[in-house]
Length: 533
Image 1 (cartoon, rainbow, N blue to C red):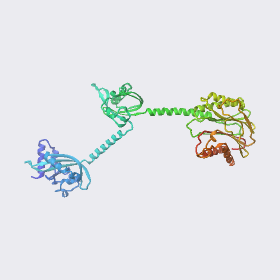
Image 2 (image 1 turned 180 degrees about the vertical axis):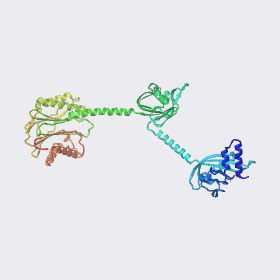
Image 3 (image 1 turned 180 degrees about the horizontal axis):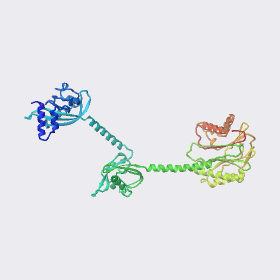
Image 4 (image 1 turned 90 degrees about the vertical axis):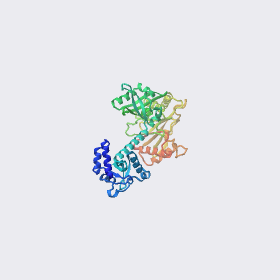
C-alpha cells in the first residue's frame, strides 16, 4: 500500500469517527493541488508535492522530491533539532502543530503555521507524515505591529510627565457603583502622589481618599462610567488626607470611560496657578509703575513756536525697578517758561511716589508765583512729609527762562548744574549749589542766580545718571561734568540738531561706561530761536 493510500485511509477512518471533515478528504483525494499539503516518508524526505506547496515554498516537484524537509527550516532551527523534534512528536502523539519562520527556495522567509500528522497502516506501522503549511506572514506582521504598538503605548504611559491612573468600578449587589479600585498607576503618579504605585494598586479609592466623595470626585467618576461622557475638571481644589498625610492641591483632572472603569490623568497646577497669580500681581504692579512713571515723566510742550523743548528718559541697568527721576515744564501767562528736573535717591514705588509729589508741588508753587527760595523750601517740606525713611533725599534743578528768552534764573538743591551752549561755546552754568532736599534743616535758604543767555542758545538739564557712569570700561573714575561738557563741545562742532545731539551724547556716555548705564537718566533741553532744529 502506498503512502497516499495510507493517508487517504487514515482520513477516511477519522471521517467515520467525526475527526475529519469531508473537505479535508476531498483535498487529499484531489491531490491537494491548491492547498499546500505534501507527504513525507518516516525519515522526513518529501515524497509528494502539489501546486499549493510549490506556490508557498517556491520549489518544483522535480527540485524537492526526495529531499529532506529540513531545508524549509532556518539553519539555527536545524541546528537546534526543531524539524526532527516535530516529526518525533507527530510520531509519538499522532500529530504536531507549530509555527515559526520558514525558508523559501529563493532564501526569503515566511511565517508558517504547520500541522504534521503521522500516517500508519492497518498494522500500526509508521508509513510517513502528511504536512500542511499555511503562510501566516501577514497575520504575524500584524501581531508584531500590534505588540510593538502596545509596547510603545506602555512606554509612553510609563514616561508620561502627568500621572495616569486606571480605576475599575466596585459595584454592590444591585450593580450600583459604590467605589473604585486602583488597577494601574504610572511612574508619574508614584512620584507626584502621596503614595507610590505599588502601595495603591488593588486598594479602593475611598479607602485612600475618603474626601473624594465629599468633593464630588466619586460622583464625577461614577457618571463617566454610567454615561460614557468624559470628565474635564479644571482647578479642582483638593483638600484632604492620604493615610494620615495632609493633601492640599489644585488639580486639573481628566477622566474617560475604560471598560467598567475610568482612565484618569491629572496635573498638579498649584504652582502654575500660583505663578499665574504672581504674574497677574506683577502686571498690576507694572501698570502701577507705568502710571507712576508717566506722572514722573509727563509729556511737555510750550506754546511759543520759537522755542524748542526736548526730553529724554533712559532707564538704567536695574530697569525692572521703578526709577524716580522726573522732569516737568510750565509756560506761564507772562511768557516765562519754568523747567524742573530732579532725582529721588533710590528706586521703587515709594521713591517714585515722592517724586510725583514733588513734581505736583512744584507745579502748584510755580503757578502761584513762589520765588526760587520759597519754592525749594516748600519742596523740602513735601519730601520730608511724604518719605517713609529719614534717609530718603532728592536733588532738583529749577530754571525760569524769561519771556524775552535772554536770561534764566537757576536754583539748585544738590543737583548737577545745567550746561549752556551759546555761540559755539559750552559752559557749566554757575549757580549757588544748595543742599539736597531732605538732607538737613538749615537756616541758610536756598539761593538762585540769574544767567545771561544772549541769542541762539541751548540749555541742557539732566539727572546725575548722565555723569556717574565710568569714564572708561572697568575704570573707577566717574565720567563727570567736565567730560560731559567736553563731549557736548565736540558734538556741537558738528552742528547737530537738538534731538541728534542728545542721542549722540547718551551714546557717547554709554560707550565710555562700557555698556548700559547703571542709573536712570532724565534729560530736558530748551533751545532759543534759531539755535537748533
